[in-house]
Length: 102
Image 1: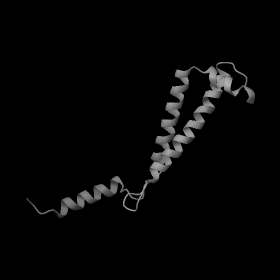
Image 2 (image 1 turned 135 degrees about the vertical axis):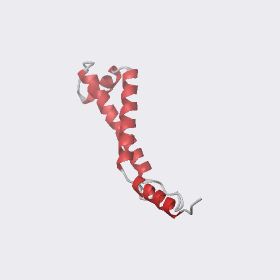
Image 3 (image 1 turned 120 degrees about the vertical axis):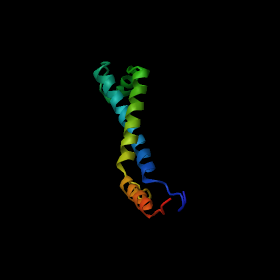
Image 4 (image 1 turned 90 degrees about the vertical axis):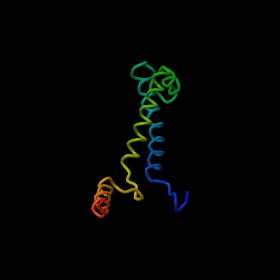
């Protein structure tokens, strides 16, 4: 990280979103283990509730929730070092209007 190549706030937000997604995924897998696979909801039976959910189901949940949380948090944050599409279009129009005729 340097002044010429700062870390975008979008990168930090996406990393935080991925971490939150992983935690929420575990909660959702536990809820499925308790509600769908009939495991006990007690604290001592958490491992059994998590293990009751088949691996392919767990994997898809972790993938989807983590990707969605990461993408949503990265999309939500603005980057002060990046110009908007509207600003870019205005610069393009300005350049076209100031270009000498060919």
